[in-house]
Length: 192
Image (cartoon, rainbow, N blue to C red; front, side):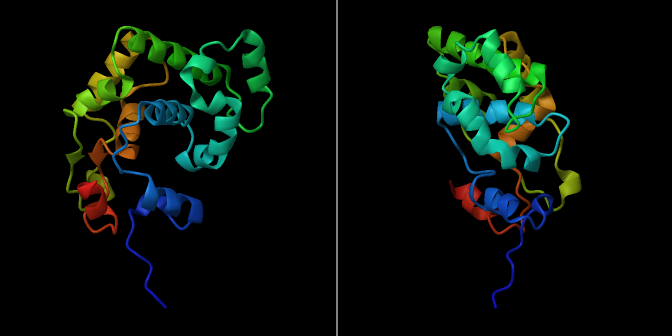
């Protein structure tokens, strides 16, 4: 029997979490719609563990029109009330409203001729920051880059985008490679 690969310890032994760690987290993603969805989902995590949101991810895509900003921006107060009754999402009014606000922020940036993907990646100079952490205790909760992203997104009308949420987002979409150096996907994420 093959030995279990070495992974970053945060994903534990949950198969869903391990799959996310191995195939998604830390792999550079430049698609503006994927980035929008991930930023919104990371905002939903505030005060919760990521596995809670990961388990509800499919429900979120169903509830929020596949994270199409054009559709979400049209959501009404009735849609907010509907979402507050949906057990597939976090039923917190501010969090529900934040995804609608973020969709409007996305569209406002795009209307100014700003590509949302390029905008977000500009905070790391357009390419991943490759770290070389030996242990989880070395990994920061926020950085100057995530603070700058947070400030700019808030100014653009986004919510649930504090510097810690922005850093978790940057890690997840590969703007920073925060896999530990002995993790079996560290090199793959470095090459992406």
